[in-house]
Amino acid sequence: MAQPIVMPKLGDFMIEGIVAKWARSDGEAVKQGEVITEIESEKLNYDLEAASNGILHIVASAGSTVPVDGIMGYLLADGEAPPEMAAPTPAAAVPAAAPPAPRPANAPAPRAAGAPVPSTPGARRLAAKLGVDLSEVTPSGPRGRVTEADVRTRAEEQGAASGLPQPSRTEPLAGIRKSIADHMRGSLARTAQLSFFLELDVTDAQSARKEASADGGVTIAMAHVLTKACAESLKRNPDLNSLLSDGSVQYFDQVNIGVAVALKEGLIVPVLKQAGAKSISEIALETNELADKARDGKLQPDDMAGGTFTISVLGAVDGFTPILNAGQSAILGVGRSVDKPVVVNGDIVVREMMTVSLTVDHQVIDGAVAAGFLRRLKQLVERPAGLFK
Image (cartoon, rainbow, N blue to C red; front, side, top):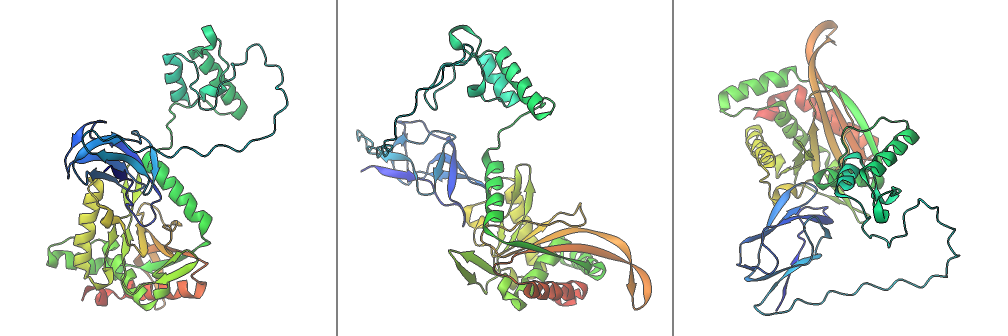
C-alpha cells in the first residue's frame, strides 16, 4: 500500500516547509532509514529519512513549498501505481466580460495565466539579475520573443519611474530569509508589542563571571549570566513565561529560554530547556553547544521547540527593540556594555553599564508586570553572588 511522505512539523509554529532537494530520484528504490529529501523550514534544514522500503514517487518537486502534513511524495510497493491526487475544485462561473479593448501593435500577445513568456535565454538571465518581470516587458524579437534589449528598456523605465539608480544586484527573498521575514511580519500583525528599556550596572557581574570562568574551566559570558538572571526573574514573574495560543494564555512553571544565534541567513533561536534548574556553568556549556550546532547546520527539530521566553544579544549597539517570537509573550534584547560616569552614594564614579530592552505582548503583559520583571532582573545582575551559587 502506498505510504505518503508528508511535510514534517519541525517547530512549534511551523506551518509550511520547502522541499530543498530530493536525495533520490523519482522511481528509485529506497530503503528504510535512508535520507530521501532535505526539508528547509524557517529556522533549519532537516534530512528526512524513508519510513519504510519502497519505490520513490515524487509529487512535490525541489523548490516547492508544502504545508505541514501536506504530501510530498509516496513510497510504493514494486509495481504499485501511485494514488490519484484530488482534482482541483472547479472555479465558479462568472459573468461574461465585456470585449477587450484593441491591443496596441507593440503589445505582447495574450497569454494564459502562468504560461511562460517567450524570451531568449539571455533575456531571462538579465531579467533575473535586474529584477524585471518578463510578463511586463513589451517584446520586439521574432515571433513575439522578449530580447535582452527589451529587458534593459523595461529596467530603465522602472528606474525612471522610481527615481532609483539601476541595482547592482537583485536577489529573491527566499528560503530561510523569506521564512524569517514572514515570521517577523506575522508576529507584529498578531501582537500588541510594547518595549521597556532599563540600564543595568554590570560591573560586579563582569568580575564574577571572569572569576567563575577562571575557576570552573568553562568560559562564562555576560549572555550566560543574563540567561540565568532571566530564568530566576521568570520564577518571580511567571506571567511573562507564557504563550498566547488560540485565544488562550498558557502559563508555565518550566522555563525554556530561546537564545538567538546570528547566522549569515538570519537569526536562529535554539532553545535551552529547563534553564531555571541549571547553574551558570551548565547554561554556558549547553548554549555554546547549541550555538555550534546552529552554525554547523546540525540542529534537530527538538533543539528549536518548546521555547517560552527569548534572549537576543546584539552587543554592537546600545539598545534595540526585539520582535517577539510567534506565540511568546516576552523577549529580552541585550545591548553592549560600556564604561560610563554614574552617581553612586553621591559620588561620580566610572561603572560598566548595559542597556536591556524588554518587548512584551501588551495583550497579555501589563506595564506593571513588565516593570516587576525588570526590577528583579536588575537586582540579580547588580548583586550577582546569588546567581553563581
